Amino acid sequence: RYGGGGPAPPPAEAFPTMGEAVKRGKADEAARAEAHRAVEALNVEKRRIADAKRREEAEKVAEEKRAKKAAEKKKAEDEAAAAATAKAEAEAAGKKAADALTSKSGADLAKAVEALSPKPDAAGFAGAFFAKHGADVAWLKTEAAALRVVAPDVPSQVGLIEAAKKHCATLEFPKDANLKSLVQQAFKALFLSEIADVEAFEAWRDGDDDSDAKVKALMQTTEFFSYLDTIDDVETDEEEEGEEEEEEEEEMVPM
Image 1 (cartoon, rainbow, N blue to C red):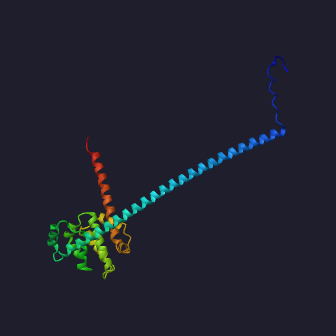
Image 2: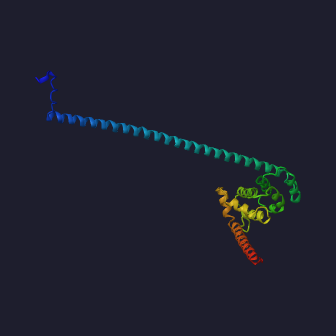
Image 3: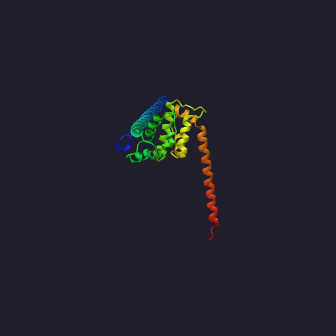
């Protein structure tokens, strides 16, 4: 007993044995490893969920793009079909108008066409006269005034050129006794009679049509288009010379 009658001191803490310490350390290490595996598994699951979400979003975006592309394609096809239908209807109407006027010629025909409202489609109008005259394209010069009325601008003039190509295609692109192709004669008549401008021929040549008929027509009109290219070169040189002369004159003007 200690003096004073107070309580006895707590017993001294017992230190673990070496075996117990090793065992406890292993248990702690296992617990830490288990906790690490649990955290790693959680991170893996988070990454899996994030990857799945990204794939889902990417697929959604891709599907939206596919849907948009399909819609744009359908819209373009519908517009092309509508344009083709409208073009065919316009040509049919132009041919009908021309059929009613094939008995007229020269100034009388030009006057009759001028009185029409709206003006007939150029391609359809020309197609009717091509059909009437067959392999004779001299009518292009005779009816030049009327053709200028129905084809006052480049797009309608392209229609005339296309009508000439189509007509020659139906005749299988014939040539005369001098081996001159009918399509080239028609093109020359359209140009020399001032019915179709250089710009119209260039627009027709550079258009998207890659049909066999157009390829054949181009093969038979290489001489004609070479001639047009020469005209373009001359006009370009003259324009440049004119600009240089204007600059020289400006320099000579006294200040």
